[in-house]
Length: 394
Image (tube, rainbow, N blue to C red; front, side):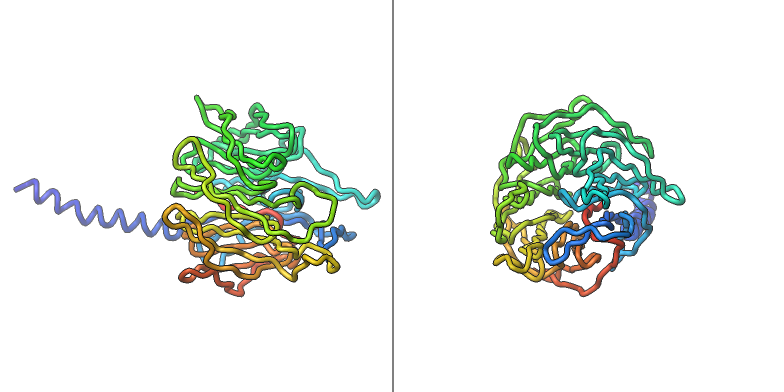
């Protein structure tokens, strides 16, 4: 008699706890950061650096609501050169990492590439920015889901692991992957592996966490030409890499917006393997996979960065949406976006997409409705041209 009573007495409590958990999840912040290059302006396909520019900034967004709300803006040092993954925010939203620091020397008309990582304490009021010297220009940064590890890729071919304890960031010994440039980086969902794009060598390096230390596994995954940005799904199954082609290899001849590619990688079991190469419009600066592993969004410049006399010049870029089903990705939608647009991320619920419109100094907001990507027409203005975009690890 007592056992049934006891069981049924607990049931309402369990239901209440589940309801409270669901309510907390529904209103938990979904942090997204956009770094913005204030000194640079693309004009008619040309790189320009106007006098008296606005500062470079970091915009912190709460994307748990739609449209996302600006939480705060912090002055930093950042540049558009390199993959649009040079900003990252910790799972608790209290710490940001910023790479790709650049300054423009107006007197000598020269862009200067700095060699430090910026650590932004977002919990301080106002936010506090400190520097960690790396000795090489950093390209991309990432946090793992636990918030205890960070990774930085550099142009000297090294990955710099970071140990994170609260607001304290400790630089560990470098992992020498190559003698050439690395680009984007991402942790797998389980936090036991990481993928780093080998920009000049057409592949992805796989890193492993072994005995509390990050090491080069020696495994490589084939990609297209000039792998650039990397993302991984929260279901632990997939990773995607954007390949920006000859444009990413600093080719000096004329390029006329050839099609490029995105590589789909199965990370559900080792060794990781590329399983599909997807054709996308030219120069896919940003690529993202939805947290639920059902969608891929690729943001392509598609010639909108070219001079008007180039036969490949286009008035705007394109966002391409792919659906993943039965282990294969299929294009389902394509929508116009901004001029020379950069990064792209999904919201935590996989229902919305944010794209950086560089020339317009805006973030464009899209929704997935049925099997289509729809431009909501909503925009978030930012100071300077948005250059890197990242959500908190999910």
